[in-house]
Length: 93
Image (cartoon, rainbow, N blue to C red; front, side, top):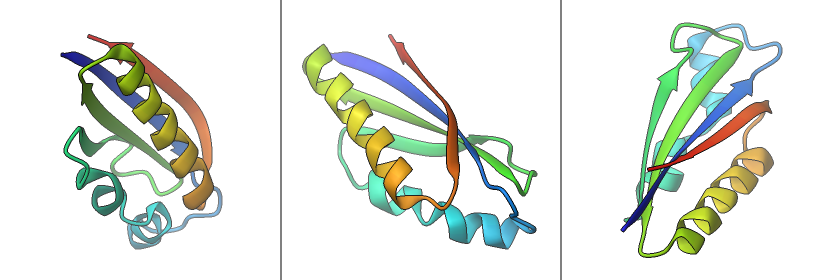
């Protein structure tokens, strides 16, 4: 069993409310949380309007599977979220 924690920090320029922040982040729980190998939560910047931090716990049978899922999450987030990814860190446990 291989496990990684992927943490992404996102800037949301011009975001003026928590409601707008939720709309711009666009349902990450629904998109990624349905996958049986991924757990997702908003892990930081909870009260800031112009930034967000999300953590994903990815589990797989091989390190290659886990790395591939992490890359897929990063790519999809960059394409679908109305914001700019500032930082992405991966920690393999």
